[in-house]
Length: 401
Image (cartoon, rainbow, N blue to C red):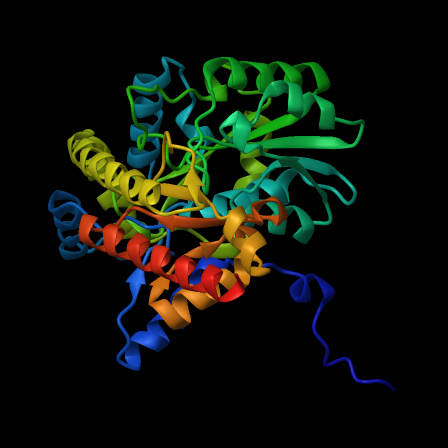
């Protein structure tokens, strides 16, 4: 008999998030004494606001260290429902809100609940890698919508409609978007929802960056055009807006017919999220958006610094990000002149010039020719990082000349 000590094909083809691999490599170089500017990882550099941390400490002191119900404590789920009402003037049943271990688990569980073998799921490319990886993991067929720079990387309803087929199960949207910083307009969102309703398919809306938005723009959600919540699955969380990445707390707002199946899967995976994280998140919501607005003000200043520095570097350009905290820098002239792809370019920048960035293809095949930088960093680091990048490009292109 042959050995059965192999690895499942599902595990072998599971995709990992490249930003964490680059972070690991950058940390190794730092341990060797090298100076590294970190522009690769997508997390706020701010500390979690003190009032949120104090709520967690208080919860721990009171003995809130036990299991909670699988979908989370009712108080927090009700507070999320109230905030949703304030944000979108749409009433949701708090019982259809399920807390998750980060928004990443929310994406995974949403796909696990709806995707059958062979189902097609439309998603943005470049986009957050967990979408494509999750679709494949559950036997679905990823259908990338190739975002275009000339369209400010927006995902228009016309483009979505062109990809819909009889096999389409869902459309994933992410606004504001990682990695491009694009923001979908009200008409974009309405158009996608109308397609979903007419075709009887789902819209999975990842809104993790919804409060990190600039230039007076307003975030719009599919929930505004699907108040009955038949077609819409909302993914959100506390990581980005409240600088709570390490707390690992996200949530799903689901159509009623999906709530119980989702909660069964959540129970199977993690039983429930961390109890004291939930009490901290409750305080985050009760505390309002003051701390979020302060962070966004600083991101606005940092974005300005990034735009200034990129404009000083020859042969690169960047669409002004309208949300989130990423710049998606077009380096196609550099890759053409050096015969290096964006992955190799990112490796050289890290190893030889001490600046850690994410190559565009880490966010999908359509990211070739781009580098993603996070401006969730100090102005000094942003300026120094882009200057190092500029020096690198000057040296690399002069060698090839």
